[in-house]
Length: 187
Image 1 (cartoon, rainbow, N blue to C red):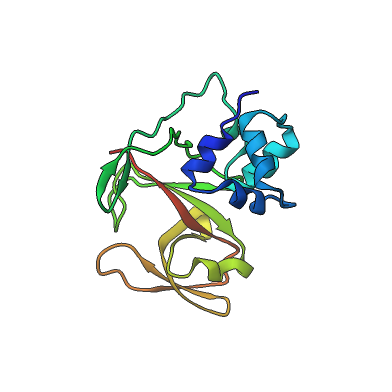
Image 2: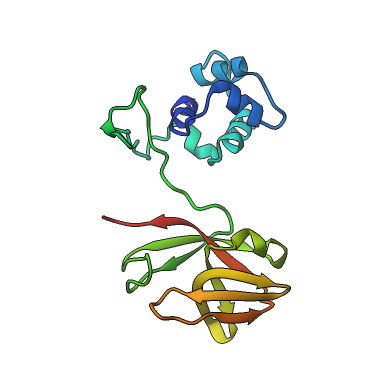
């Protein structure tokens, strides 16, 4: 099996030691290096541990014949675009389990028509993690409100819709909300 552990690790800007420390249970930089170079066999268990440490799916760490690589040609920084120091491959986005999407039909706020907004569902005990972020709030009869979560008082959420001149709306005890985690936009 040909792995892409090194390419993904470098794309994430992590050292061998940092990946080893992020593994559960932690391991050494030497072990990660051996797994990257193929001097040690990569089992499914190791693949899953390293994928979790890198924050990607295990499938992103192996070369699959039906998936084309996306080589990194340049890195854009404050000083402009420059060539990467090492060969890198960009990991294609993949939704996390339980994610939902919002399709943007007409431009509103920072979003343009054709955008996809990927969201992660949150249960009430995690609503505070979405403060000052864009969220989708379910309403009765299959309706939703999408806007910025600007406040929370107990079970009440204060949402500022994205449209110009929109007024804050209050929602009592929604069963869940979904926080925007990724924007997919064609240029």
